[in-house]
Image (tube, rainbow over all chains, first blue to last red):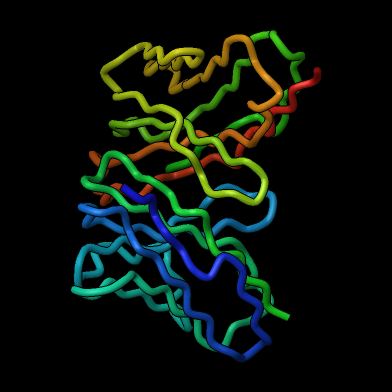
Length: 112
Length: 114
């Protein structure tokens, strides 16, 4: 059983461009969480999704950020018009329930 | 409010025991977790404890929970250089109405000297 997959592992964008981060959960996991880790910080919750539904987006910035988890395919975290402050590591976690979360390797976004 | 606090650094000698401490504030938490993060990598789930337990042991790892003081600790016996990493404490306040999103501390950087 492959672990949580994230791609790309590293992403470089210029200010104003769009960033798309992908997450494929572990087989059989229907819960997906996205977290952001700023340098020297812990992880901060962004959004929790189940298939085709956003369950909790209380940690998501109100503008420029969106997430989806379609019926088929990976979960996508989309950041429009990136700014330097968006530079961070973005982690996806999947879970078969709400009690155990398994993390992917992360996508490290650098905004120039 | 919800907050998880950890000391930032811990240095031990190879073969000694390491104890990493964590305090949390949400009394409704049902699960508490320890994750390990090596440089440039994702988070590896080490162990977790349910809030009605006082202790959990798994090979070299021992988790102690003092629910009254809201204090969680991770003890690593016979610490090895491969244990050098950042260790995150996290809580899962499901009973508080949350949907299972984890609240993390800032992490404790464990350095193991040969």
